[in-house]
Length: 256
Image (cartoon, rainbow, N blue to C red; front, side):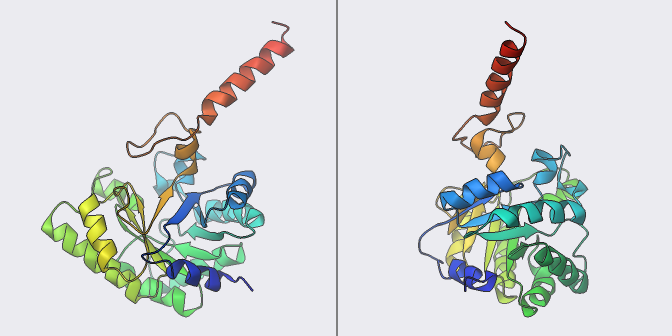
């Protein structure tokens, strides 16, 4: 049986091998399309706060939001591993982290993801001990954006590099099957990947510097044209197509 634990183990086994492809999904039709396309992992990211719900950052996302969207994606996935983010303030202690993870699994998540390294080692260990696969997230932590005063590239100083290496090792030691490395200097991301025993999945951390890549689906297909990260190369322009279709339909309806 292709259980979430087996799926996570299969991803773990690809360390240094075939690159891992992970895309975000927040709704049934997108998730079904990506699942049928063969994407390895569907991430129900708290990035939905911006690209779906219109918030300025992820700090406004609640557990109710993640449960709602996680359920929709889980209904669609037949082969991909579904990973759901633990939203801010839902994993302040190991006990709370496990409780939140269990709620997400009950909603259909195959695995969960949380932000942090050394400071979250006990939290990850508590979840994995309960048989729930965990994906780590180090480097730039979007849930800390208000504390840090913006989105800042990581891994530029010796102290930051040392801390990131320690974070990656802590996440692996706690039992995570992989970890995201976000917006970290390419040379730092590469050195972490070489030293880390579990797969690393990069976003904004250089090309071919990690064991895989993740992208926000809205960025990839041009569905959110109001802001596109500098490191993203859109492969489609969905927003333009929607505008053109709507305008063509209005002309037809209005007899123009």
